[in-house]
Image 1 (cartoon, rainbow, N blue to C red):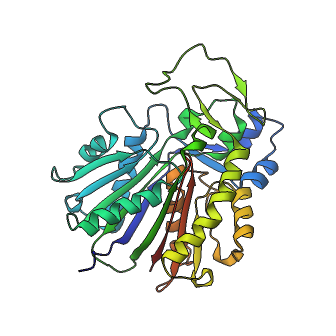
Image 2 (tube, rainbow, N blue to C red):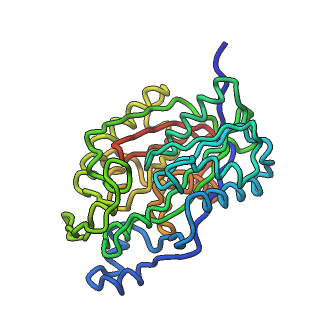
Length: 340
């Protein structure tokens, strides 16, 4: 007997009300012109959480929008998966807080998993496995990050890229109108690159301190170990090395040729990186979807946000086959094919 299929049945997302525009960045960093920011990263504004707004808050708002837009009762949820690297607390798990606020049934499981830009694909893999087990029918996958709270105020590079957001995705055992079957998934990990994208202090190994001297990264952006550090050149090299083989592997696993994919949606890192990847993999522009200008790089939520807009914009029709791929911090990467 073959395992049960899993379907991506709905996506909603929430962007915090506060915005950081290119004009504001330019006023803080006069050498970083509005045109230069847009040309380099392809982002015009980012959503930033308020000082008293945290992952559980934005996760709940995204899920509530999903319930309303998809006409779903919270009682139907059998399992909550929350992907975040900026949890409310060390413990309890933030998923338990979200579970309570959403009034999910006490019979529903709830857990956090700490994953970054590949997190949506990892979440689909976990949800698909849960459904294939036969133990659950409906999984709520939430991806939520508040990276802005990790950034030094003087770090113009990362402040230009990252935005806060939460996305809520429903994965079901039952096919419905407009849903997409989740096909075979390919994942990968290489922890040797962990130090190239890291918030070093704040955990038990390296507690946060008040006497950290500021350093500068390769582009002159200030940081110390209390803030997010990204070695941009190493992340770029990793991406160019890992993503093209990932695309080949997931196509092979799904017995597909590249020309059979109707639309590619990759993690929305920044314009420069995505365009470089598109050309390297030889994806036609009309088959390569991007949507980050109005929200920035929202880490694990970039793919579901872009996917929702691709469908709303009419770029996806019944019968289409899409390839989704995430990659980044960890290092970790993953890809899957979904069929509408």
